[in-house]
Structures are given as structure tokens and as C-alpha cells.
Image 1 (cartoon, rainbow, N blue to C red):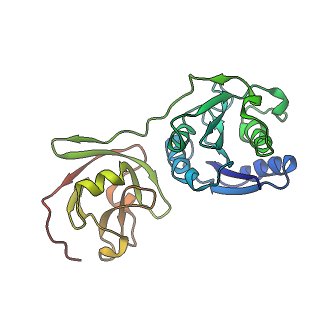
Image 2 (image 1 turned 60 degrees about the vertical axis):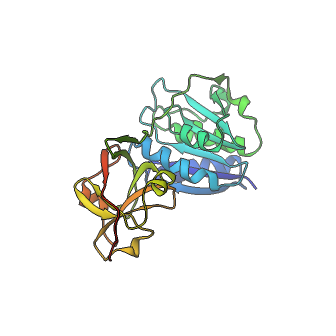
Image 3 (image 1 turned 90 degrees about the horizontal axis):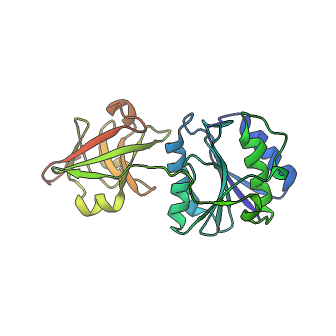
Length: 264
């Protein structure tokens, strides 16, 4: 069974064309959508979504990811091999956090073999390059058959948390459909530094660090470690993006208060 995961900012229409190309080459491929609603040109959000999803797929999965504002320019199409997984997409950093998550020892090839392409458009490499390459990889083609190995691939910085004068400085890397704000602050750091019930100030709003959403009353803000393993800022049955006016790429400070009892 060949599994191909798919991620893009294409919304409707265009993902179906990529799937059609794949199925013409490998009719037995199992296609799994991670998301086709990554914010337009949102490389950082796409990279985060791919990074936290890829480890759950079986070994041998081909991950086709296309968030590609540089399509038609000199940016390179690439294949990455990491931890018995393959990634196909543009050389703009989108694939690298996921590859690094699976293994620090990964290889990258530039796709240059024209025999793998469809008739090439200048605006839809997802259909014309990445989809046929992903399909052929799912049939057992070696990654090295796409072109030459490269070492100067584009890396992506999702930001590194900082602790400055007792403040924890982080960055928003994803916003989900519930309006939850996902940050780049690892859960391991948060759990070591805070106890459940500790009060935090984020963007001037006070909220508790809790175990789950229902720990606070409806409409109240909260902070927790989400299922993705990173600090998440939420509102129980509400929208944290609207409350805090945060968006992907924004930098914020988390200011802890003294520990104390928290009453719902």
C-alpha cells in the first residue's frame, strides 16, 4: 500500500487536479489530505502543519506539500528523504522542519529530470512537477532518480523561544480553524517551568495554564500544551485570535505571575 499525504494552500479545485495526476500514474495510491486550507502563501504555517503531522504516517509515506509563492521563478523543486519518509515540494523551507523532526540525517535532491514532468505550466508546479514525482516515488522510484543531491537547500526558521528578564518570548506559527493560537514554545519547556493553575499574562490578557479547554468557564482565555506538543493559547468555546489580535508570525511575550490556586 502506497500512502501519499497532501498539503497545500490551494483550497478547492486545484488539489483534485493533483490527485488526478497521481492516480493516473499510481491508481492504487492512498491519498490522505493533511490540509488544503493553509493560509495563502503561508510557508511557515504549512511547515508547522507538515512537521506535526508527518510523524504519524507509516514509514514509506510520500508527503506532497505545495505552498509555493515562488512558483515559476528560479526556486528549485526538491525531494527530501528522511526517516524512511519522502517529501516532495518547493525549495522554500516548507519541507525542512518536518524532515528534521523525523531525522537529523536527511538528504535533499533537486528535481531536474524532465522525463518526470507533465507539460509544464509556469503557475502550477503542484500538478505538473510535484504530483507526478510523488506518484512515481510511491511506486518505488529512487529519490536519486529525480536529479542531483544538493546541500544548499533553503532552511526555515520557526523561531526560537527566548527568556528575557523572566519573560518568555515566543512566536505564533499556526492558527487553527477554532481560532486557537499555536506557538513555537515547546510543551516540554512549559511543563518544566509552570504548574497547572499558574497565571500568565499574554498580550495584556491574564489567563491560567491548564490541562484542557473545559478547565475554565465558557468565553474565558487559557493556555495549555496542545496535542501537537506546543503551547497553545485558546478561549473556551471562543476565539483566541480575535481576543488577542495575534496572527502567524507575530512575536509575543508571556509573563508569568506568582503561582497560586486557580478557581474556575
